[in-house]
Image 1: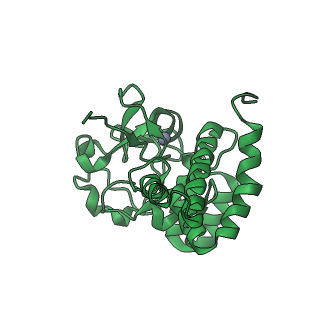
Image 2: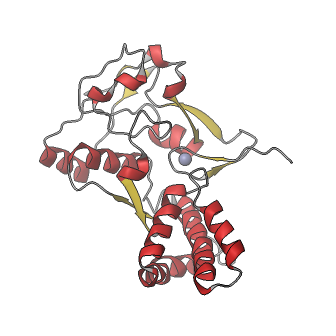
Amino acid sequence: MPYLVRRPSAYCEKWLEADRIEHDVEHFRPKASIARWDVPAHLREELRAAGFRVNQPHRGSEPGYRLLAYHILNYATVCKECNSVLKRNLFPITGKRSSDARDPTKLASEGALLIYPLGSHDADPEDLIEFCGASPQVRAVSGHDRLRALVTIEVFGLDDWRGRRSLILDRMEWVEKLLWALQRRHRGQDASNARKAIERLTSTTFRHANCLRSFRRLYEKNPVEAERLYEEKIRPLLESYSPAKGLS
Ligand SMILES: [Zn+2]
């Protein structure tokens, strides 16, 4: 059987090419320095209302987590857009920074505002962020978990139609494929193959896993609502931005 590694970018869940040109090994806690993050106004207000303050350099940068430079639990395989363009050296927290830490599993008290997406020592991103169609939504109604989800969506542009349109359209295309499989299973058309496709498309290691798994949950609870969401929010955009018409 041919061996082919396919894995999604840990933050945006788009597929990474197998040749590694597209891969960045990102340090979740930056190893060299921490840069200042300009907090958008709507998040400043959320933070203030929740009684939190972002701990980060007032200007310029401050030293990073040099002792975590080679720690396996400080790595994530991500796309260049997520790492080099969006996250860079950002690592906003709400607690006291432990720059001399040696073990990333013992840093909960820092109050990180980004979610470490791999392994089990941080929250499962699916518990904090879900999707409505192709749009990420915050699950918690209040508290630090709500802020982490908001900041993660903001920093990685997960709902940024201007900056990450191709990512969002890709999600929509896979939601469409999943919907067709769900409908075939529902109607009993080639149900066995439809079931296999649904399992493949909603496995935890598939591209856009969180988005597709959210859509499957919605369809299984309320197929009419899932179909309405697709008809109103997804199909029109896919038709507007079809390759035949080009992206504009
Ligand atoms: Zn990415």
